[in-house]
Image (cartoon, helix red, strand yellow):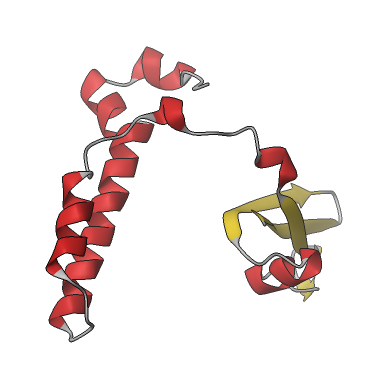
Length: 132
């Protein structure tokens, strides 16, 4: 299920909505990875031409209806936080991805998120990692 961006539908031009759509961002990310593959090949890493061609052949085929989110609840969740006092002292604790991965014994990372909580005297910044 894809939720409509209310602000974009009201205030952004259709061209901007298209540029920042989920599908467009996926295509841009795929183009980035194809460029990385080509650069790695130029630098001498053994990458077959067929691999690059295979990636290029599916660059624009994005079907979000085939994404299965039903297993998302089965993901492990790891968290690592740092606390700052008065915004001056800290961090107390490490908000690092590797610490979050280790805290939940995650072997394959699927999603990394960042969360901040602000209070009168202190703030808490956390890295949250989801995976298998």
